[in-house]
Amino acid sequence: MATSIALARKWRPKSFKEMVGQEHVVRALNNAIESGRLHHAYLFTGTRGVGKTTLARILAKCFNCETGLTATPCGHCESCQSIDRGRNPDLIEVDAATNTRVEEMRELLDNAQYMPVAARYKVYIIDEVHMLSRSAFNSMLKTLEEPPEHVKFILATTDPQKVPITVLSRCLQFNLKQMRPDQIAVHLSHILKEEQIVYEDNALTLIGRASQGSMRDSLSLLDQAIAYGSSEVKEEQVANMLGVISEDYLYQILDALSQQDAYNLVAIAQSMADRSVSFVQALEDLARLIHDVTLLKATKKAQDALGLSDALLPLTEFWDAQTLQLLYQIAIQARQDMYLAPDELSGFRMALLRMLAFTQKDVVLSQSQELKSESSKKKQLNEPVLNNNSLPPEKNPHIPPSLANWPELVTRLSGAGMAYELSRHCQLKNFAAGHLHLTIDPSQKTLLPYQDRLQSALESILDMDIKLTIELIKDEGETPAQLEEKKEQAALQEAKYSIEQDPLVRTLLDEFGGKLIESSIKPIKND
Ligand SMILES: Nc1ncnc2c1ncn2[C@@H]1O[C@H](COP(=O)(O)OP(=O)(O)OP(=O)(O)O)[C@@H](O)[C@H]1O
Ligand SMILES: [Mg+2]
Ligand SMILES: [Zn+2]
Image 1 (tube, rainbow, N blue to C red):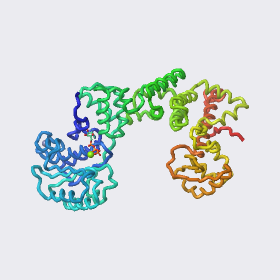
Image 2 (image 1 turned 30 degrees about the vertical axis):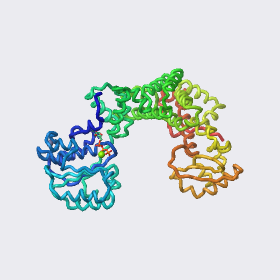
Image 3 (image 1 turned 45 degrees about the vertical axis):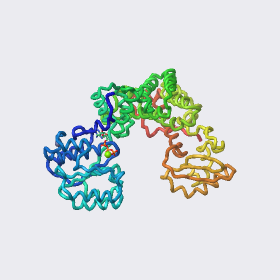
Image 4 (image 1 turned 90 degrees about the vertical axis):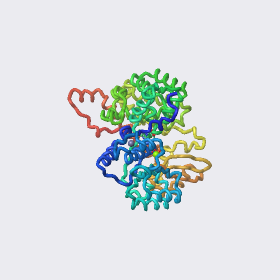
């Protein structure tokens, strides 16, 4: 097999030129070295696998290359080679994550006073420096305050917040950026070509996304993918390996939607089920794809900046921005409500059919024609477009029927003043053995003093004793207050749409150059 050692190690950049990204850091270091302006302490910060240790080693070579101080170390001299091999007597690498003891640190730093063995500088690379104990920091600080001429410190950390300010202030600090998925994909494709391994571009896109900004993670995923696909890197296998959904499916879905092909939509869902994909993941990926299409439609500039594929371009033509918002909403809502669905396939299929229902031109048209008859007007406009939050959560056995529909119960509290306000901003988490567990977003915590009142109000409505707990949790689902706002928005969208589609309005707009004043459109409310 072509790769016997881990790719991340084999492909660690040996020069600034080989680094992917981090141009801002590379440029600054280059200039400083070329002009001979050296600091005695550098600090590289950034999340894992973005090149901190790699840069530290390259910088050490710059300091000590036998060709002289240089931003382009030769890579051949004894100094460069032994640094690359990890065996250079003048490069002391400490991993603070494993070496946090003061005595060890002190011993290491005591040695700083001695001259380097062979090179110009004695270079200390202290990785994960935030892990040093306080006393170890203090002992390092002494050396940092009066560093001998022949000593250079290169510190690296994923967590600069934990590094004492006294240390930070003595370092020249560089913040490394996370790798973008497209940067990762390009780098991986370069490596695979060199390794003569067959691959599909889409497979690399998937790995690029899954690596969450870490080049190292992307390379270990690539190692796995090569093993998994017996020396080939194919989209479908990588998708399987990562538990993600091949983009093909997602494009097929949007394509079928654009053609309003219900039969095909159902067939695609079925074939996904046959491959036992995770439908929760599929909804997430679909939401991401719709997001990308929406973004691209809003600004074509996003394409390069975010590395969006050309394949998205045709999709921006099918739907208007509002419909895309709706599709996105349906995807994330269905994902959130998956636990309520009879099974994952049904939940997914319903989401697709719902998307279809909201994009079907004739359906929408016939609805809006119906709207013109007085009798159906009110009914239509007041039917919320997205009211799946009020689906009865029968699936949760701990919630008794009277509590099953929390938003509905909340409306019954509407006479309860501040207790009602509090309830409107809460979500139902659980109800078991008389214990009602609600959650509230921390931004609404000023309502918490009304908890006792809410408890009594609920007790009298439900006619039972309850123990009420309200937990502060960052908002994830939807509170009755948000739901109400959303219903209003949806009704407004519907109203706008039906007005725009009204033949009379159309004629006014098209033939007489009329303009719709959007802010004047209001949904008709029931009394
Ligand atoms: N900017 C980059 N360009 C090319 N390869 C990179 C880059 N960053 C990381 N790598 C790859 O990832 C591997 C790990 O990188 P490195 O050890 O420099 O990461 P790090 O930022 O020190 O991560 P950690 O915080 O986990 O120590 C390298 O051997 C290299 O293969
Ligand atoms: Mg490192
Ligand atoms: Zn050299």
